[in-house]
Each structure stands twice: as structure tokens, then as C-alpha cells.
Length: 216
Ligand SMILES: [Fe+2]
Image (cartoon, rainbow, N blue to C red; front, side):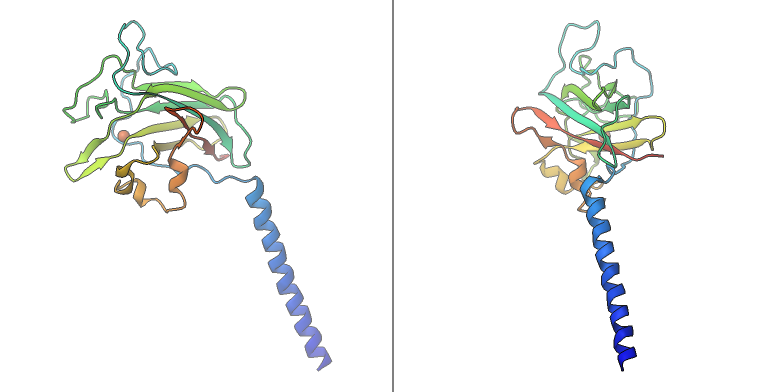
């Protein structure tokens, strides 16, 4: 009997110990770790032809006088690794539709107008503190099929030696089309917030969006 009890105690202690350690492990992970930003398809409109002007300001094209049409917005972000450490020297690339929902891409079948004053594509390095900033235009929604309109979104790609390339899409908060988008709604619910920018509570037209990338 004694033996039995002590065996049960040993068993219980080891189970509790296991639970305790497991819980500690979860806790430690949750504290510093960040889940990587979910990947998304590159889509059919990744730029095909190199362009001269790929600076952070997409509202102006070098050599042209006019500003891009539409609402000017700013996107501020940081590139982090999964421990939460900021990563400098990451190439952050962004491409998107113009205010009318049209890509400057030969395969875009959308009859909406092109905007020669809109740069459409930018490539910048993240700075010393892992930060990046783009001045751009709030992208228009566009039809992916006759039954499906894509919500306003911006495509991102990151590259840095030693890290997994991240290709993803950033959505905007409060957009009704987010609820019916076939790509966004296919993501598990817990992942969706990581793909939706936050409106900067202090500055109108400014959005915050962090990218978390994994070591290769
Ligand atoms: Fe797109």
C-alpha cells in the first residue's frame, strides 16, 4: 500500500512537474517570441520591368511634375526577428495598385485608369533600428473575378541573407471587403490581425505595420 501511494505520488509529482515545466516553457516563449508574419501569394502583378525610381516616396515619379492621384498615406514599420530583435539592412519591397485599383503591369486586365504620376513599386533598406517608412497612395479595391473584389492591400517582400524570404500582403483596418476576401479569410483567424495594419492613433493617414521574419 505504501509502495503504491509512493508510486502514485511519484507519478503525480512527475506529471505536475511536467505541467509546470511545460507552462514555464510556454510563458518564456510568449514573453520574447513573436510569430512570423504570415506568408501570402505574390499574386500576378509583381513588377516585370525594372524602373528607375523605386525610392520610398511613391507619390512622385522622378522627372514628372504631377503628384499621384488619390489619398496620400504613410506606412511606418519595423522588421523584427522572432525574438523581437529589430533587423537593420533588410531589403523591404512594396508594390500595389493605384487609387483606381489598377496595377502598372501589362497583365492587369482592369480597365480602370493608369496613373503616370504613381510610382507603384518601391524598394528600401530597413534602417539601423530595423525601421522603414513609405509615403504612398491608399490603394483602390479591384475585381479579382466578377464575384470577388480584392480589398485595398499592399504587397510586401523582404530579403536578407540568413532569413527566410517573406512575401505577404498588408490590409487596412475597417475595410468591409476584408470580411469577404478569399485570401484573407482563408487565413486562420489568429493570423489575420498580423496582416492588417494599425491606424496610428496619433496621426491621421498614418499606418503601422511590422514584419516578423524567420531565420533560415
Ligand atoms: Fe494585389
